[in-house]
Length: 382
Image (cartoon, rainbow, N blue to C red; front, side, top):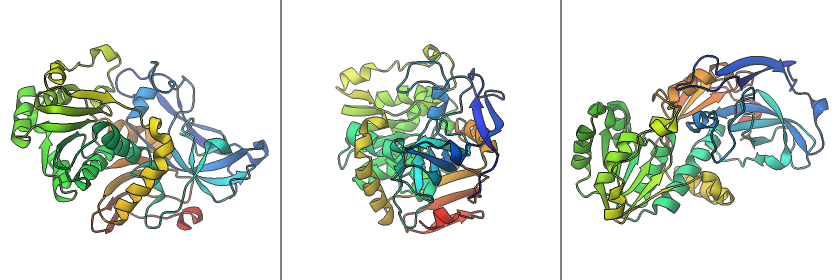
């Protein structure tokens, strides 16, 4: 393909205070990298898809974490699916589809080292964007967080917050596959209906119906969890985590995956701490966090298992792919208010992959697509 002279990039020009505001992430036109700039061992890639994830708000904070924060003025970080358009690395050829390095992901084109790049295997019947969702970081987080930290057993009760989200919905389905009773917490009747009718959960709790009242939410927990909770996979934190601690069974496991309710709080000390933590003592339970990168060497095993469950009709997924890097910031903002409908991502509008579509893969292996889709030659070859 011929490369443009200029490309769109998004840089973090200032750190957000509270919610992401105009001026925090800024879209710019900058010089596109050229083939002549390639060094030995490098490849030039065209971004096809950008993953939009809750963790991005944390990366924008100037705080110690599992990876360094994005620096002011840097291109925003993000996972990507890319097509190789030029290569000086023996392991990659033009047309290969690869998973790009996360650093400086919010661009249309980039030069990256081949050793930091993973070639993606073809999996018939699945969109490339699945490698950012159910077969990517989302799926890996659900798989290892539940199986390695939660360690559910058949017949146990698994409760999942953020259950209609990209990670939570996969957690729910894996727990069902393992023979557990599964109850999901989500915001709104539409999401709860999808969880119960499409994914087959045993019960759902619409936390919004409690209007932020802890006792009202606790009553919902009592009604849906008469036998208590053996595994709680938490993506939300805050009041939900605190009240669930009161429903733990003996030797329960609480998996701390995220705490999206507090991501926009600038001072972490102002995020409410769980006052019911003594339930961990009395119930001899444990609460454990994890980082999915700890299991990176085992990712291929998880991808194979997740793909197998999808092909068997046991695992469904939903995607919400928005068009254009110029819309990515607004789309990311919606992630923190529940405005997405599945795994959120952005498709590069400069590529031949141009669509705004919600894709559902339901358990009977029927694929339903809303909107029009055009795929590039590289993606259609898969």
